[in-house]
Image (cartoon, rainbow, N blue to C red):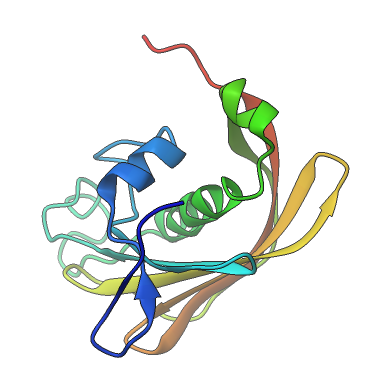
Length: 162
């Protein structure tokens, strides 16, 4: 288990880049989790600050850049993948399995996210059916809901490195 610390409000968080990088295969510039704020058996809360230099801002509404919705979804799914590592069996871990999204439902975008804004990704397990994990995600920014959706994840063999 990762070492646990407390933030200024007394809530627990995991501040380990190594834990994030060992949990999922994503790497910059396509890694959208900076920090694990809290992580329980019920849910994970992560955060990410969108830097003004992110690759997509140059072409996505360049005169008034906003974070693309697909990137917001991806950020929450990455948080969900990290969360699922607690639920993997030892066999799945040792076999090098990684989570892959198979379906998204009830996707609702509610607000925009702009450069230099920090989001919070909150992901919880709704249910597990056979080898499929159904997760619920909520992304917020400055206390406002930005995105909510459900997604299904299955485990596959870790892709070979190029």
